[in-house]
Image (tube, rainbow, N blue to C red):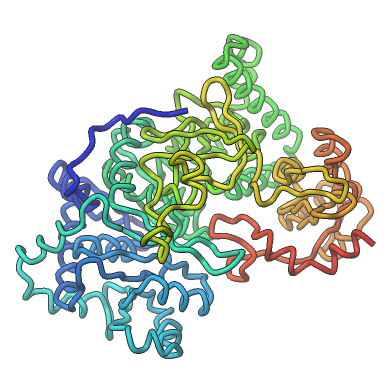
Length: 609
């Protein structure tokens, strides 16, 4: 399946900074960023952002930044992060995002592997970064500067860095800006490295520019409303958040930043029209709404409202596929009643102005997608990798099929290999891995064997209308001792439908049967206990007969969707609390399977005794 380009190709001399210059020229006073100022919001216009970028870029040039030099950025998502990113590009450099949760060993590796000689770091992380550099003879000898990523204050701040830039002429700055063309590296994004050292994916200016030029006309509902506003809470070191922010800047969307913990208050205050999320966020919002209904004695009303929302959405899908005429009169009436009683309150959780959300970073339970769509908060699932600069497929407002990740974005081609692997070719596919870009090693693994397509490692299928469904991860497919191939993700997704389950990992590689490790949802447990007039701590719940019976019901429901040979025979409730900081969750809030399997090897052995 191939989607045609929607925008004409640009000159080879173009780069990401042209998107900023075009935005500032077209609507200089349009807000492109919103910064929290106590209880209100302060806006940064397109012309104001360009001025800040040029100011900092001149400081980098004055400090000796050469064209193509790598500059690392280690900080939470913020205006300062974005300012540093664009200033590096404007000065002709290459940005290297680093997760603020990365370990010192990971940071050292990324700095060494990328060849970075400068780093912007959040003020609180400067001492740790300095220690990493001083502890490495190679870095200590090579490194030029550690700059605190703060707009004001004493010491090495952005202000003190930019000061010497007053002596850099506009002509010299422009020489640096135009030195990088479309095929030049813009950023090096490192993968999570759960099975070894992180790999640096070289994302070019063309990857960003072509995605922006083609996604804006492809997603007019998201990016073309009169006053589009987006909240981003994913780390900008994540390629999806990074790419979407570039697209939003080009489209004139006002972007506000939030941490995951402050997300709900930010949504209420900023009232976005567009939200980029991950499945866990939608799961949490649903669980919180259900818990509130239980506390207020309206659990039955919420359950009926949820069922009507899902049915309403499902009939829309059926109609789009030619299997019906959409919601009937009775269903529309019930939907209207629950809209007043329940749905409008749920929409207010997102600020009340939300028109569309996009979910990426992992599979969203179809029942949850139907629920939010029926409530009036459509969730458009997409799919992509670091190696594809984020989105390579996405559902659109006029072409939604719940349970799929949509059709290819313009300029992208998707096909399925004989073994079910998803292959991608197109505008977002990266230039190569850092350190493997010279000579014969420059070819990406398997590309030659797949006629220029990048092998994603994911398994999927395309339907007759070109919608892609993800069925699992190739390396995660289990082969039991009996030789049965089992894709764990569909089973895991089904078990997570239980409000008691936060995470689940299906296991069984080389074992006589399939089993599962379950992490209880602590908020869900509180709600479950309240419904039954009980009080249980998570540790006690792991052995509670009633809880185990409930979990077994979730296992049975999942097993009903597969053959007996693929079904989960035993499970164990594990007492860990996965976290990004602890290294067991990815920044998109997915479990790192390999890490959990190592941590829980004793529990696994006990299951198979």
